Length: 325
Image (cartoon, rainbow, N blue to C red; front, side, top):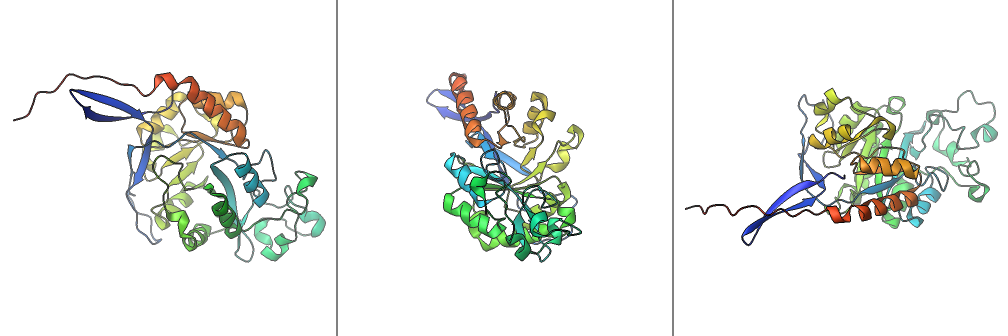
């Protein structure tokens, strides 16, 4: 069953217990980057009604070329509320949307620049990357699609009213990239504002590099952050400054999901692409999942909620307490 938080209210002569998913409010960290504190602030969870969420992976990777504006458009067309993108940095310091360390899988870099000694993203300037076709590898329909900058992607997300999971990709190859990303987000202040408690979160910053996530959290204390990968059970209490832990869906069971919830974390595993896997993670109690197929993910969530509609909310009548004098 999906995780449920308990909210108690007095109604006439009885106390009714209402069930609702929990969410997080953050104790702020320092506003400026610096030495990471030995005891970072923790996340305090209060009653909330955030929905189960099918996060559209790399734009909408099952339907359009990943990490492109066309992918963002596809996610919106398919009804997604939140998309995930990957951010790296070019040789001349520009932030671009790319997943792989090299350009060879998702662009025609080898054709446009034959014989280059390196096809790593970090070894190309933005002007060079602008010349690449980032769509034809997926389908001829997308021929000529370009690699967007983070700034362009944020503008498109704003125009489409989409929320964002921003993954800092390969930060060891891009030292200080979390500061550059923070600067870009601050320049578009809408990303530092929070959605209402019953809506999906506007922005999550995440990475497999947990120290970079921690560093980013110090720079952007009001922004929820997530750890990608499976945090060992014994280490879960060490990361209470984060909001989410998002592991590979194949590495979790219901007990692990319960453990994260007990410590105040949300969990949205990746990359959940079959209906059977979607049903499995929902049954384990996750708060959502990341998928290449947001349309299928939303159908799975609707069916899951419909099956469990009669089970929540639960009302429990308690004896009337003695009056205090």
